[in-house]
Image 1 (tube, helix red, strand yellow):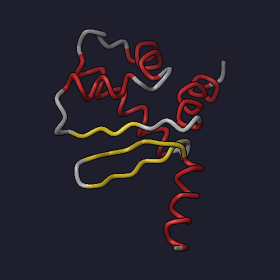
Image 2 (cartoon, one colour):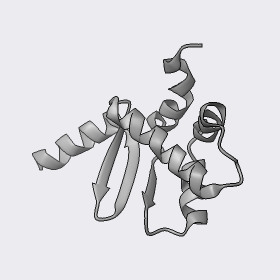
Image 3 (cartoon, rainbow, N blue to C red):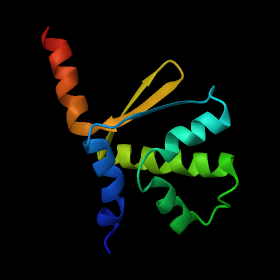
Image 4 (spheres, rainbow, N blue to C red):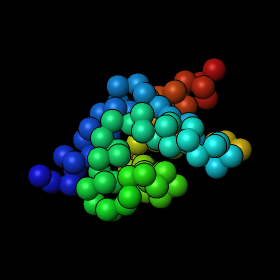
Length: 103
């Protein structure tokens, strides 16, 4: 299975209109729960990083790292406002920003 296919489930989750918002100021349980909404994300982390699944801090850090990597490779969009990071579909993000600029 190629690397691209392994991340397809995560990317598809965002392409279906889903998004998450996380902040360093969130309680860890809320932060981790928000990341767990992303279909396939936890499984990728468990497969490659061999982190104790019960360590929410380590899992959340690794999950955010994967999302940031997908953003860096232009597979998903990331917005940062104040201390909040939102991850969402790249195409929707491009069109919504163009629409805002036009009006």
